[in-house]
Image 1 (cartoon, rainbow over the protein chains, first blue to last red):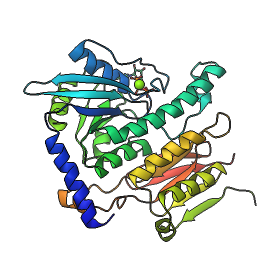
Image 2: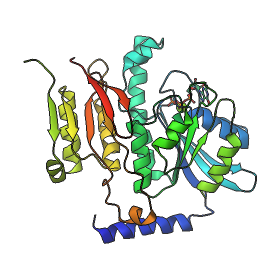
Image 3: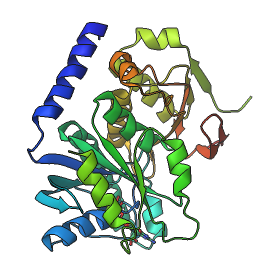
Image 4: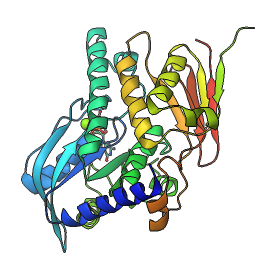
Length: 212
Length: 119
Ligand SMILES: Nc1nc2c(ncn2[C@@H]2O[C@H](COP(=O)(O)OP(=O)(O)OP(=O)(O)O)[C@@H](O)[C@H]2O)c(=O)[nH]1
Ligand SMILES: [Mg+2]
């Protein structure tokens, strides 16, 4: 792309953002398998609509299809925002059916789960083009420098779209949200526990701010 | 000598290839058990295409996917920089290999340490 074209496309993306203000924005919840995306989606949707989005499991690739919840109005102390929330399958560059067998599934189940998981990853990747913002959920007990994180962040940056990092599982003793902050200092980060709700109001405030 | 083949692809060569060609070259190599090192990395869009293509190739018991490691792009994000940034200009040295043969030991902002094993 030439410089002029690039400026123009970035400029029109910026204009789009301005004019889309007030309209419902479509926000994806992304991250590696098992980071707590569905736990967070369920908590948000439960807090504001009294419903749930999907099932949660300690076995990775529990979500293998994207689930969209329309028109969730998130209220924080001094603002509110209405979003379509898309809970996506965990992104990965590798899927080994033997990992599912080690987690206790039968061989047949494991093979099926692996197949569906690969389809889920493709679906999650394709959804990226149809979003206006992303909440990237990371497991704060794990290494943040992964290709999945770098790829999601790179895509949002290339399109000038807002990204908010949720450093999840801070209830666990070995969590280190500061490691995430130093890995990706250019994006706002909120340390949370999607499981027990720690800092969830801070996250809601940031969501209302950041995706406006 | 028995060993693992390592292909190091220069920036010049990568600049001549289209996205489709790059992804095909990477996956063909990795499926054959090679480790591929790219002098300049992929754009974010190419990374997502590579993930998609990898998923379609995964076959239980035969190919379980790729390990891919690169450094995060520089953090200088002034609006002017963002506006003028060449797509992918932030991408850097990247290593890609079969998931069952390439294991990351430690990764940092500026050092990547990996273990390569035979099949
Ligand atoms: N300790 C702790 N565990 C959590 C937290 N959030 C989620 N979990 C657990 O992590 C596991 C995975 O949670 P999910 O919400 O299914 O994760 P996911 O990111 O949707 O996973 P996939 O759909 O497989 O990609 C479950 O066992 C959750 O109970 C948290 O804040 N703290
Ligand atoms: Mg899930």
